[in-house]
Length: 235
Image (cartoon, rainbow, N blue to C red; front, top):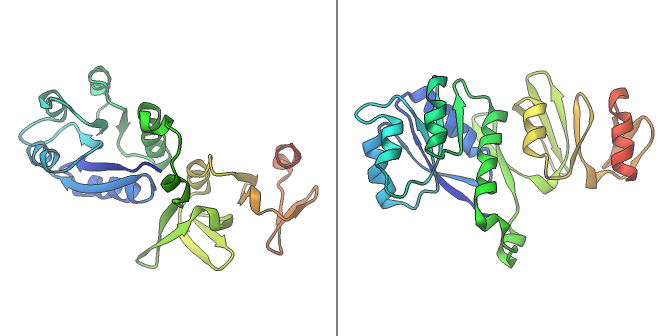
């Protein structure tokens, strides 16, 4: 899996913290630094190989759009702004996406996923090293960030503002919406079978019209999900 080195250019600490937290949850992003102004970012771009910049518009010293124009070979840019009126000019500068604050995580994931559409590396045949690399996500658990390998997840249960992620060896509770994690895992073989459950399709041992069995646990199939679940498992 190709990883993108990225930086955040943002003068508001809380906004930068939100983006930083989002980046750490996406396996193909690698955070290289947080810059409070565009001049600092320019200096960092000369020292590091940076693939992606999360760029605020209203910055001290040099504004975000002027920063893009000043770069001879700019990296990919995702604009993060509270103001919609600069979107057209941003897209004219060929930015990947334009995110309006406050930024929802699912919208963030949609934006960074567009990188793969632009990147010719992603279209190349996968080499042996990429095949053996295991995708993982980090989750906040009791003031720590816990790594969970995606291929070890059995199922995920929604508990109001939290989700419980269960693997064969452990279970963790973290603050997340089930819809957010469903969108993140959309291409990893996960199946929504109930408004409260997301399961790994290849971990299902048996199923009936009312439930699926994974590692000895019966998980209910929601009435409105039944037709889609049966089609996905029998197809």
